Every structure is written in C-alpha cells, then in structure tokens.
View 1 (cartoon, one colour):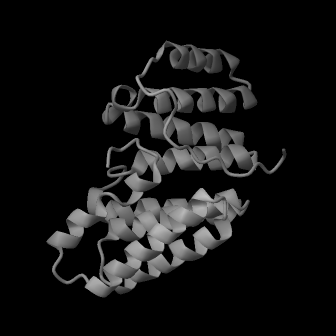
View 2 (cartoon, rainbow, N blue to C red; view 1 turned 30 degrees about the horizontal axis):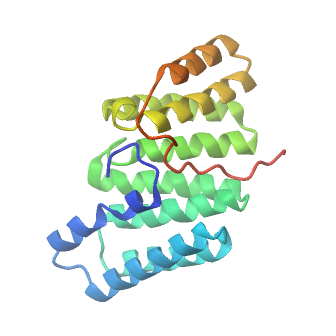
Length: 207
C-alpha cells in the first residue's frame, strides 16, 4: 500500500503478502481477520460506526491470537481508532492511533510503513477535538513522511485536500501567512482524479 493512500482497501492490502511468508500464522485466524475486516468495511460504508468498530475489534483479536504480523494488528487498531474518532471518543482514538504507530515500528521502524497515514489521521482528530496546536504539529510530522513517498505526485488530489485541511488548522492558531501558502499550494496541484481518496473526519466536538 502506498504510504499516503487513505482508502479502506489499502488498509488491508499489504496483509496477504505476510500471510504467505509467515508459516506460523493460524489459517483460521487469517480467515476470521478477513471476515471481520470485510464486515467492518460494510458497516462503515453504511455509516454504522458502532458495529464497524465491533467488527474491527474482533479483527484485532484474530490478528493478535493468530500470530499474525504486527502490521496486520496495526491496521485493525487503526480501524478501531478511526471509528472511535467518528463516534466522538477522541482520547481513545488518540491512544489507539499512537498504538498503531508503535505496532508498525516493529515491522518498518520509526515513521516507516503507513506512518504518514496515521499522523494525518491524528491531525484531523486533533482538529475535530479543538486541539489546534496539536493538529498543526501532527500535520508538520505527516507531510515530510508523505513527501518521502512522493505522495504529491502519486495522489495529488488527496495531497491537495490535506494541504487545505492543514491551512484550516494553521488559521486556528493564527498563522494566516502559512495558511495562505498551503492554500496556494493546494490550488497549484492538479491531478487526474476528480475527487480525493476517502479522508476520515471525526465528528467535531464544537460544531
């Protein structure tokens, strides 16, 4: 999965390779992991974040109990965190996103793997939470990681959407000059896809 992609399918696309390379993985747990992840995706598509969370929790249990790779468990924890954000449980979502990063460190090292995706998720979570300084800091962490993966070229429309979100956070902390630069950057980016890939915006604490 490219570092910067945000689609649900990208969350689990990398898992199959490890299934084939890791002989001690339980096939029953692999099936359960995939089944509950797929069910979570369906519930999420319907806007049923509570049942989606239940499914992702079961997927995590299958990953942990089946000796699956750490990044498979990380993906499940990331999914659970997103659902908690959508349900307004900010403190739990924050803790789980950071846990997801720690799990992936075991496979990819610090800030490797899907770290930029987790940091962008944290940035949007903090923004919804009203923690604008933390949101800015998370964006500042995420963008260099995405740039290392050449995300502006591989997914320009989503990159531009993140620039606009970053600009909103900068406005909230009074850094209007940087905010304008981010909006100008977003406006300068042109991509083939008419819409950005799915971005998850937690429910706002102060609508």
